[in-house]
Image 1 (cartoon, one colour):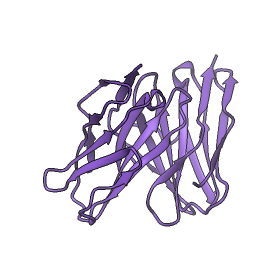
Image 2 (cartoon, rainbow over the protein chains, first blue to last red; image 1 turned 90 degrees about the horizontal axis):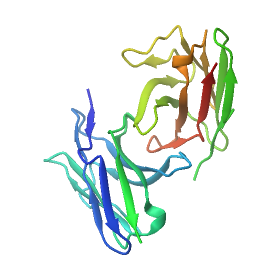
Image 3 (cartoon, each protein chain N blue to C red; image 1 turned 45 degrees about the horizontal axis):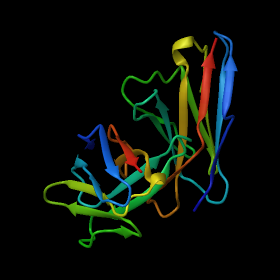
Amino acid sequence: AQTVTQSQPEMSVQEAETVTLSCTYDTSESDYYLFWYKQPPSRQMILVIRQEAYKQQNATENRFSVNFQKAAKSFSLKISDSQLGDAAMYFCALNDMRFGAGTRLTVKP
Amino acid sequence: GAVVSQHPSRVICKSGTSVKIECRSLDFQATTMFWYRQFPKQSLMLMATSNEGSKATYEQGVEKDKFLINHASLTLSTLTVTSAHPEDSSFYICSARDPENTEAFFGQGTRLTVV
């Protein structure tokens, strides 16, 4: 069975600063995808970034990037130049679409 | 990105009645759809995975006779909460996997209140 673990229930960052959200996982698959989703107060789930396991290069989407460590089964999300609109719940998931417990990110002005 | 429409966004039903929630992929064909339940300030709990034309795969602890899932076409999956009780009140979310079998796109969610 695949599992996803997010050990940071809450994180806080100052506007314009950088923050890293952690995620570890376990899977027996050799090829898989990893995702970070964002859920703002509207509760609409939004894909932030995805990583294909067979790609060694870390995925990047504008201010969002990941640190994918396949051997360590770690998949952290880095948000650079944090903005007020980044405040939300962030969930990590494998391609079976089971989510971690989530991290609530607060952005301080 | 692809659009998934979930309807209704809010529904109130009487205890003992059934309520159906629809999930439609508007601009792509979804062979796989997912149904979640989310309690306040908690993560999304996967209830079941449905594949078009076959029976849904339910997660452990989810009553398949209570939460009926039908995925009769490549663009529509439905979740029917049968004989609803107040403890079934929750936020239900659906998602549909895109044809390239990568990320899933989410509906807006349905807030169910059973009175």
